[in-house]
Image (cartoon, rainbow, N blue to C red; front, side):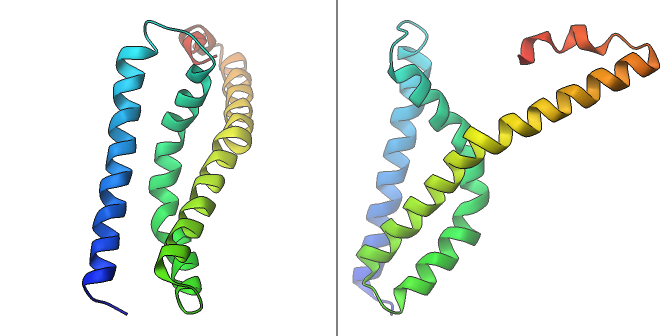
Length: 127
């Protein structure tokens, strides 16, 4: 199903995603540096989610949107696909990434102790 309506929807969605990304960057550069508030953690999480969203948007989002497009209108299937991509990215950032980081930190510490390399001092900024 192609045509002007679907192209217009895609363009509108692209502009909206670009606007949200631009606003997030501006907030992170100007606002977070000067004001610490309840929004700081949320904006940081959104920033950390950008790469998982990039990795998941085509494969997961495209598969879900394509599967739903057969039975639902495009205005319904795209938001559902995006919601699942954003939820998946948040879960990766919230649960998987800290566990992987902790495991890597432990492995690097053990390797550094075993080889006598003081690598732990150079990693203190990662905590």
